[in-house]
Length: 263
Image (cartoon, rainbow, N blue to C red):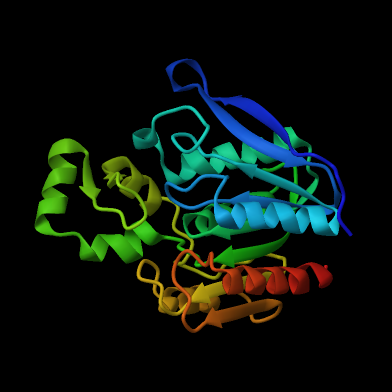
């Protein structure tokens, strides 16, 4: 099956006054819970995995939604102003603006943290949609506190206090990654791995064991915080953080198909 329903580009204004930013997103109509792509830190909605999910949605007739957080891709706003809660709020607003009543959140790296926060908010009745399932790819919840903070050098810590940020070379871009004091402080207020995570829905995790950014042990820690039922972990022995090779994308499709069939 392959339908010809086109994707539609949209723009949503989020925030007030000087904080107002234009959030770009794209959607396509389809059946079942809408697949929502939540990208990672400094990634955008035109990446390989997002495009693969669009093709999957087209082939299966499912609805699909993807966005760029502020400071990312086609959206407005300064990247340096971004925090976990700010980007989570933008994702929530986009999902609600799309009219989706039920969703399957597909979170990659930092996007998995956003997905878990959205799921918690939805369970509290704070969202106008329900989360029917979660697919987490190389998940990096709490990465600022658990993965980065212990490794910060004295120079990095001094830069944060002096300048409000520090820069780190990126393996994926010529531009360095910028990590702000606000990002760390906000992240510390929105940790999810400090207790059991009651998602109320099936969860599928895909993790590469050769991931240089998020070790597979982090995915195991996440597994320990999730209920024993309806949670699966697929480890790709030679997979890296991107999980964008053809064989990785095939695995993602297979795992996603199994997740959706359980709904």
